[in-house]
Image (cartoon, rainbow, N blue to C red):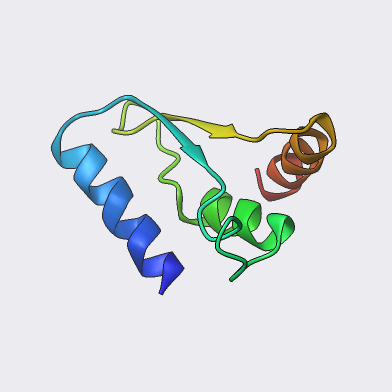
Length: 78
């Protein structure tokens, strides 16, 4: 369900030609997903194509430890 919501959000952002998106870790706050699962899902579903919309994703977290975890996950999935 969260995967579908993310794909839909990225499609809507493309329709609106939004280049930069900022978002918290979708699904982690509600307790449905761990931070690692949420970050992985966002990285896997985000459209990564040169010149496409959206092209930049800023994942917002509160703690440095969470930022480090997200950065490590993004490096692995890139």
